[in-house]
Length: 270
Image (cartoon, rainbow, N blue to C red; front, side, top):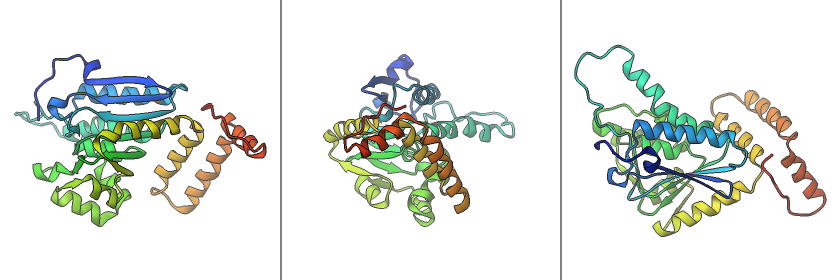
């Protein structure tokens, strides 16, 4: 929980585009990057812009200081007076769920470069990303139970898909901090590296993605994200449709031509 930040929004969510990579950086280290309403809306907007911009071919979501994101900024969230039925559900639906949904629905691959503590919605923000890199000092905490709350921000949707129902319940029921190395062992994280090496690895992975066939990556992401929500026949039909769509792209044609011609493909994201 933290107080209001008087700095302009552009200073608390830094954004740059470099080499086809959109870098979104939370920059409220004094608050462990607990995310405010304004920051949440900015991140959602930037992810939407990344989807629509053909010059952007990958996204990195990271933060400054010792915290990746300590959850939602709860300053002023506890209010007195009568609550109208539906207020809480509406707040969650339009807030935390929209943020996580924006990551899942982004048409470009999203890398989380977790530099420090990721708690509550901060952990779910990382888990929603397509690839998760973590510094050795990073920790992941399902903090909701410590506050007597139900996990939100898609936690009960994301965690069982990543670690299975029993592990998900263990994390949610106890709210223990999970070290980066344990998170990697559980399947929550792709790679763990020394803190100083995290930016370089994030840049390396992002550049590789940015040089890839952007539309085929988007379709693959869509297929994987939907794979656990339906039956085999639906998944197979979606796969065939994605392949049909993808074969109309220039990158797919370039990939096939480069194979036939025995040369390295040059993808343009089209």
